[in-house]
Image 1 (cartoon, rainbow, N blue to C red):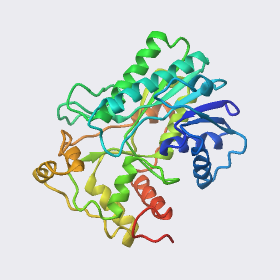
Image 2: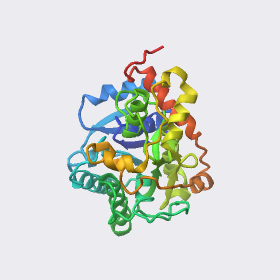
Image 3: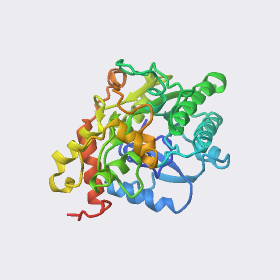
Length: 348
């Protein structure tokens, strides 16, 4: 209930800071983990941009997912934990363990600390990456019942999210004691940027606006607004019926990349003049993959594949009502422009 303290891991991240803002707006006290003291000013500046003055209801703890130190102190006195922090690189590493090890071990560190502090519930930010990959082509709609087969050809990020979520559920079953776990599985997160730190998905929008994506591969994404994902975390934290459940977070049907580009052009006019809607044939993407790292990542098993998922469970169980995918896309772009983060576009 409001007045209780919630730990949010990774408070300087795109989703983390939106979770903090939502919690403070609803009357919770918040402690958040950052990896260095210098990030405190960044978090406070982002909250100010969101229109939130935390006063003395926000405090900071220093902890790193790759180390044991600091986690028990960070969780002490908290009723809930939102474990949002997770590595998400702009480019996939050559060595998958660079992502898998910190994602899995970091999740277990947070859960062990939460158990020690007798936290009531942990809400883990997983991903659609743990649901919809490593499967044969299908027209079936993905739900929370599906799991990614990480033994198939998938990216290190997809493997890391799948392995980390499985490890969390295994921990709760084996040694979680009285801790409850709920998991949020968002698709690609767009929405308003509050500072210069943002996710790889937002980088895609920025690249489109700057004209650095002259043609688009045939890839489809589910889309959701970061503000709605933060709201879903809080609903999963407080609703009794959310314990032991996974919740997909997706606004609507998946969108091909050229429709994302067209949404930008329709909404932004001249600010989107450099956005291309040209679709690149699959064979050209595969040829480009021989010479280009980004093309190599696009040329994987998902190229040309139709895919979809639904958030019916979150809507039914938790009363979740997300914004449209178009609103999320446009909010990303407008915030990037307003912050002066798009090269060649003036603010104002």
